[in-house]
Image (cartoon, rainbow, N blue to C red; front, side, top):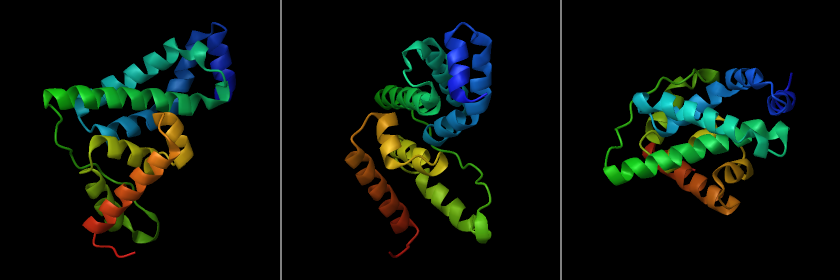
Length: 172
């Protein structure tokens, strides 16, 4: 059963079908939250909060086939709220290194180096980086998820990539 059919089933009262959506998309939500926050104590809470919010507001989803972007948008808003709260309190934790999946053509070292540099970016930039490079969203999709103009996403990604290239001393 595809996402659209599951969403419709949940809307019609089959709330147990939401567990299938959670199973299907929990990896993406956890990757996104972990890439932006990296505070193990809060990652699970934020991810679960995103699923609860998605469930509660599912009736507002007009196009059931767009559940994944809808869910990532909710998770992104939760992440941004978290970042704002913790910045005010001064309680953002330093990032921890996270293992990187092996890349094609033996590029493991380069991938690890890129991830290390990306982990030093400000949380909002890590969120954009994660949506693009971990979840494979286009700039237009990221703009929709984060409710930003597409030009803003393009410029943020350009700055992120420039920062990474500079840190790795890669020439264009």
